[in-house]
Image: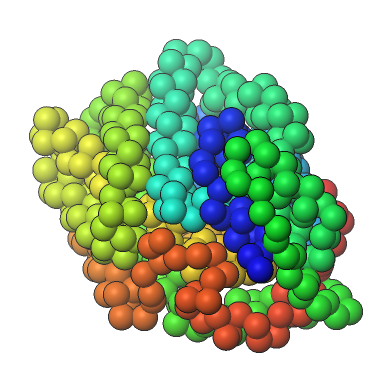
Length: 478
C-alpha cells in the first residue's frame, strides 16, 4: 500500500495550497537576504560614524553572519525536534525584536552584540523554510520550486539596496535602515502561524492522527484522487542527551549518514557562499574606495542584486532539465571568474558595472540550485539538520570573511588575486561534487533510490537527542 508521505509528494501543484506555503516561506527568506545585504550598506556608514578601522568595519558584517551561523544549526535541529511550524514563526520574531534594539544602539560594541542576536533569529529561516517547502512540494516539480525559492533572495537584496540608497540623505540613516524592516517582519510572523505542520515530519515522529488530517486536507484541497494509504512506524527515540554531548551526537549523525555527501554539501556551501558574501559585504566599500559616492556605490551593488533575480529565474528553468550537478558545476566557476574580471577592470565605469552584473547573474543561478540540491541529499529526519549544519559551517567561515577580507586579503593580495584565490577553491569543490555526490533530479525524498539510504537508518536516535539539546539552548537563551 502507498504511504502517506508518498501521497504528499505525488499531489498536483496548486497555488492556493502548496503555492501559499511557497510564498510565505519565501517572504521569510526575503528578510534573510535583506539583512545580509544590509551589512554591506551599514559597513561604510558605521565606519564613518564611529571612526572604525578596516578590521572594525569588517566586524559589522561578521557579528551578524556569525549569529546566523549559530542560528542555522540551532534552528535546523529544533525544527527536526519540535516541528517546522513552531521554528517557522519564532525565527522572525526574534529577528524583529533585536533589530529594533540594534537601531537604538548607543555605541558600536552594543550594536555588534544586538546584530549577533538578530542574526541568530534570522539564521534559522533558510534551513527551516527549505525543509518545510520541500516537504510540501510535489516530487516532479520539487527542483523548480526549491530553485524558485531563491528568487526571494535577490528581491530582498535589491529592495535593501533601493531603500538604503533612498535613506542616504537622512541623518542617522543606518538606524532607519534597520527599522524599516520591522513592520513587514512582524506581519509575516503573524501570517506564519496559520501554516500547517509538515506531514512528513508528523509521520516521522509518530503523530499519525495529525499527519492524516494534514494529508487528507491536502488531497481534498488539491482535488487529487482519494486513495487508501499507510502511515509508517515512527523512528524510535531514546533518552535525550543534553548540552555539548547532544550537539556532538547530532554532528556525528549527519556525518554517519554518508561522509562523502556531507563533505560535498559543506564544501559547496563554504566556497560558493564565501565568494558571494565577500562581494556582498564589501562591494559598497570597494566602489567607494574607487571614488564612487555613497549613492553611486549603493546603486552599483543594487544592480548586482537586481540581475540576480533574472539568474534565479534561469536556474528554476534549468534545474529539472539539466540537473542539479551540471547547473552548479558551470554557474559557480563562471560567477567566480566574472568577479576576477570585475577586479581587473575596476575603475572603468562601464566594464565595472557590466562584470558586476555578470557576477550577480551567475551566482544567483548557482545558489538556489545549491540549496535545492543539499536539501535533497538528506532524508526527512535529517533534512533540516543536514542543511542547517552545512549552512552553519558556511556562515561561520563567511562570518570571519569580512574581517579577513578587509584587513588581510584585499590590502595584501589586491582584489584580482583575492578573487582568483576564492575562485580556485570553488572549482575544487565543484570537482569533488562531480566525483563524490549523486544527482538528485526527479528523485523521491526518502525513496529507495536515495543515496545513502542504508546509512540513513544508522544511529537514528542520536539526532533526536541533539535536537532536544538545541531546543533547550534556544529556550534558555531567548
